[in-house]
Image (cartoon, rainbow, N blue to C red):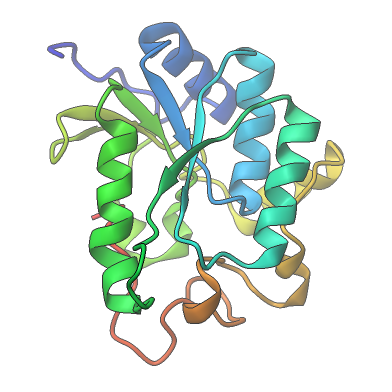
Length: 207
């Protein structure tokens, strides 16, 4: 695509999503891991576009609570979540493979037929995300990346969830600020519970 990115930094999350739908639908999709940010985004997006596309990456080692939240999302928001299979049939699970090539491979498949994707990243989550823009070029894939919540705080997210009585992942109430696969996620603030004890902050999806 050759269009220039408009300046959306002053736009609200809703208006950023509305722009994305207007400009990119139907070649637009939302990456969903069923965390609190996606509670907000799926609610907003489904209200703007009833045919919105939402996908998740299933590694085969998701928390049971994640699977239950998935069902609640589909029931509440009327979406059918597309599944990108990152399981390695016949091979034992390892963090190195799952949190790298398997997830990234599934993501590439999900994004192979779209012009833009929506994420729930926020600048305060990690130093690797501090420079994210509301609309930016994903040069690695040659598509656009839409980050409507980049300037939202933790308080902003929870205020929206409670104001709209939205379903959210129950592990957040048990001290998990960031939730990935069960074998490599512990309670912790920010992304401290992800790959605890390792010098790792991202699985490769947002790098």
